[in-house]
Amino acid sequence: MFKKNELPKNIDESWTLFVDRDGVINKRIIKGYVKNIDEFIFLPKVLDSFEIFNKIFGKIIIVTNQQGVGKGIMTIEQLHEIHDFMKNEIESNKGRVDKIYYCTDLHDSGSFYRKPEIGMALKAKKNFKEISFKKSIMVGDSVSDMIFGKKLRMKTVLISEDTDFVKKYSKLIDLVFPTLFDFAIYIEKLKKSC
Image (cartoon, rainbow, N blue to C red; front, side):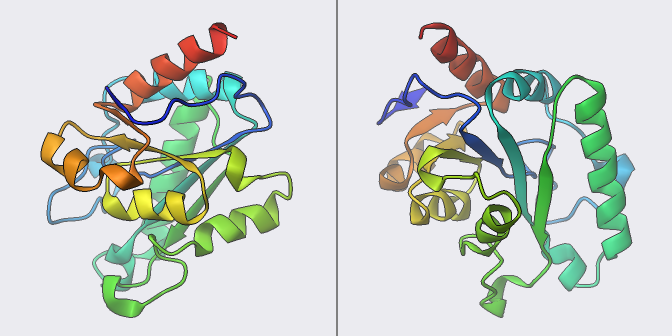
């Protein structure tokens, strides 16, 4: 684990967790897209992670770019089916997802809703007035996730084992863990140390 900034120990139900999807929750398809439930494979111990998060955070929000729909590779109905499956699996394993926000716009569209732009976070704030970005954490595996978090002054957590990537973008990253579960264990211990 790389630590530039410690997280505050007083993280409680007034805090919000923003989580990216591909490469964090489920296995990323390199140069491709998860198009159906059969291709959606949870990464190890992700469901255990959400059970831990459920006990700590007031809101758990998933924010995900899904340009496969914009490219016509998959339909919006397929995306909803994948998200329903993901949410049901998390909830049946004692986890929780309060809302899933997605952007189907293309990478070069300049869309305000596509990370690293902050449109999805502002939608979340509109739906959940109690969200404070200063009391939020963004967990992702890409530079766009880290920029998204930093634009809103969130704490940023990178899920990666790529040390070169970490060095290159260190100014955007507060903490680094190899998996979502490693982060969950860290934050659970942090909470218990209060």
